[in-house]
Image 1 (cartoon, rainbow, N blue to C red):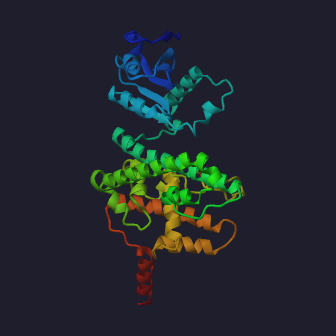
Image 2 (image 1 turned 60 degrees about the vertical axis):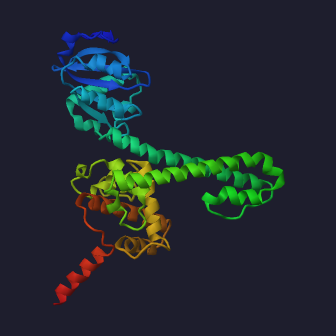
Image 3 (image 1 turned 180 degrees about the vertical axis):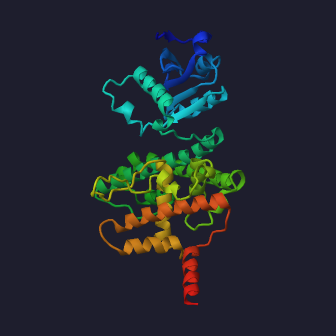
Length: 371
């Protein structure tokens, strides 16, 4: 028989808790809905609890070790750590792939919690469980994302200033974003100085803050995560990209083969094969958007005028030479995919980077055949 309860601190049905095998927990900002299923597959308890450390400890603390299924979201990292510390097995379901919940026309928190519990009991693989990074990695990754937020805000302000000046019939000369607040101030039309001067002052402050984050990232890459230096052997990969790669993936041992990293980051084409139909689709764009954007940026540098001669550059240029619509973009994505594989291998093995390793290997094989 189902038992609907409201869980408060200290109010836990210990007898029912011993019968629980799987719990589905639909996380909310203030309260979370849960559904506990027993070993026989019947619902033992349903209710809600506060989405706080005390609320979770109050319900899950007295309970024996069970499997708890939650969805990825804002609260899932710290909630998974709290539940794991209490001795429970935590399955963090990939919300993007959990279509069973999203396609339900009667979507409610209680229904979602039931689905999570039942799927976790039936087959955990149906949840497409993901791996959350550690608290330390999450803290350091916040430094990188804060810098990204400032860069995005500065870009918006720069575009606003340029657009405002252009709408008055003038135009600002090209310059770097870092020196924009100085250059634009000297070229500003008199009629717009009152409106845009505060924006330029804010851009100057944000630029200094970004420089501070850059210094902090350099220190992290040098002192806290020295393995980042292995990745920075590749010209075009700086401390920001190297740190983002390490902190986002967490552990190189998670991937048995380096080739799977490209798929994990959404840099491989999607598939929709049916019968004789196998259309060419765009990349899946799954995984970390921030890291994928950084890798594509590094790939564009490798393909650019300052990129060194290496296997990655040669591979990308061959794709670009094929021509066609968006050939340059396809080349950059292809290089980013191979770059992710290369960075994972350098990280896992600690090998020294050889820019023309594949080219030299092919030449050696050719010489052996001739001989």
